Image (tube, rainbow, N blue to C red; front, side):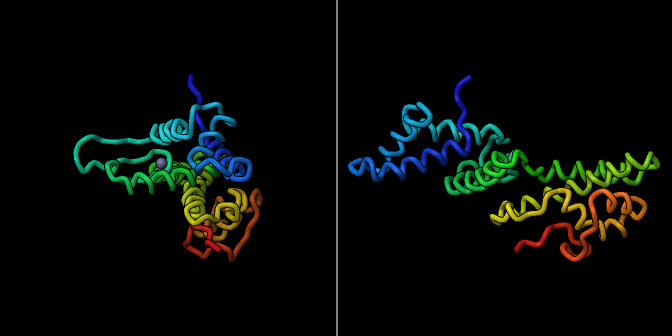
Length: 209
Ligand SMILES: [Zn+2]
């Protein structure tokens, strides 16, 4: 198993290379990146780090063959023309944004397909005739699907640090749940609280600041 770099690794190398401007003013930027890569990670050069990091990102690509094929990243959900340099660059930017949050918080919001499954299964469960606890679990799955969409929006806009936690989000959604699942809302309010007035009625996304 060879070494797989993380987003933080790449950032650390870039930071150290910047510091090397003082200690090695004679070196061009590319050489300072090489030096920082070797010092921090023991890799041959920055190109090698970049190649390995790109492989980490590309492992999630679902790329059908053929001309005009659209690649789909199952990690960050971006769809793009895999043969276009500009699209590749845009994918990497978006992918890195999600990856950074994932590395820092340990959480990656679900993709569209993952969210839809959560919402559908959750909806069925919440409306079932099963025990209350199962129905609440279903409601929480629906809420998780909505939360992930909301959180992802905040990541895309660089505001994820301000986004409410799942628990705080559920409390904000309780007023809406009262109309949607009136039998379950009191239990959710009891466990998560009730915070009206932050998310407009009928909306499921936390308003960006
Ligand atoms: Zn991606």
